[in-house]
Image (cartoon, rainbow, N blue to C red; front, top):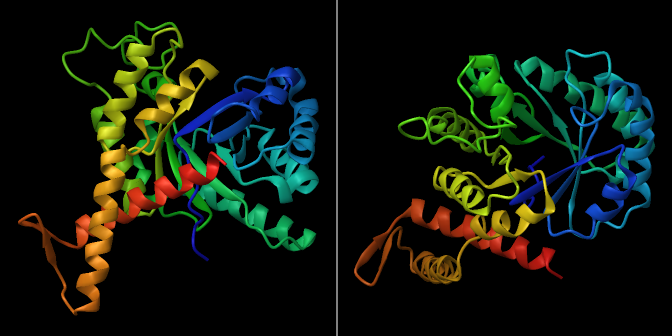
Length: 309
């Protein structure tokens, strides 16, 4: 079964125990609304939060948005109930489950097996996708195995705050989400971001960047988005609605990109009809790699157009 193509420019994390925030989320411009059961929910509220997530999925009007929720880590006593209770109550209304702090491929496989059993029991035809959040040195060390761990897996997500903590690196930002990086001579997350993007793309997955902690610093957010977009990332988590416009803009193809892609695909179809394997546009040779890139841009633009209707 092929993985679905989902628009993931912006992923807004919403605490599932905050009813007003959950109710407002569907009206915002995020491509993905991720209801959180993990870090933003106190331990004493996790049980109740599961029913709130299920109700939100069943009763909310989500339009074209991707409906996601984040479970607690697989090394906690909460994760299995996060899956069983929410999925059995609202699985037909859920697109994706985010698995945090993934250290091993077995964690994704375990979630896959459990979901398969639930779907079989409930008789559902839709298949819930998975996203793996890589937040530790151990997870990054095993990134390739994690990327190929399950056909349900649709994206890898970089969790910079916990990743930096796992390395015991120096941090000057209040949140640890990359908002104070000027003391290092270069881009210190270039290697893990690049490595994760490579693993994601090799496995046919989306690559999603970590949130930017200071939501009152639009220039810093734009700089952070531009860096990861340049490495092949498809989108970024947001922690505040004010960040969505910048994120959506930077991870969207420009009008020039879209027009160039349309020309390439049109010329490619003409070349195929004539039996040519390659062709040129304005004296520039266009190969199969250029065609694949044009197809990605075109598909993304089509998804953006659908989401705006």
